[in-house]
Length: 196
Image 1: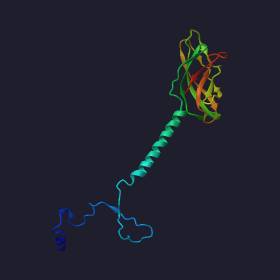
Image 2: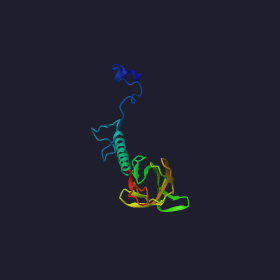
Image 3: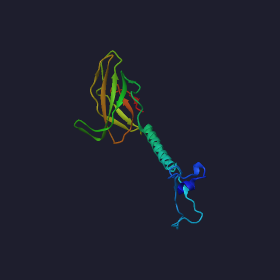
């Protein structure tokens, strides 16, 4: 009973009752450069339970920073939520309710760049029927460049009523719409509907 003789007389927490290494703190042996065996007086370095915490924190910080940059970029380029404010020109009122994502073609028509299609509500507050089919509508981008409409539907607007039309613009790829210049008649001064 050598085991009992060795353990007898020692405090209970110092006695060896089999493998007690599981309860001890794990140690990592890292020898100094040029040594195959531990030199005199060398002690193992205790393993740090949070040794992965620093790399994970750095990775998390990078991901958080990237997400913030992406959010700022979206805020800088995305238009303001629609519908826009209503503007009036001549005898008609205009409001943009949607700016559709860019597409390369509309039916058989293929854009030289890409099509940006705007949904516009045209309201006639007057007592006479109106039409904006031949009116000049222009899209203004965030750099101040103007693009004429590729297609404007010929829409008669009865008095006191409103119609919804879609106006398409053929613009360079990546164009950011900033405003729509609308005209209530062919000779009117025009008004701008802000899209941002």
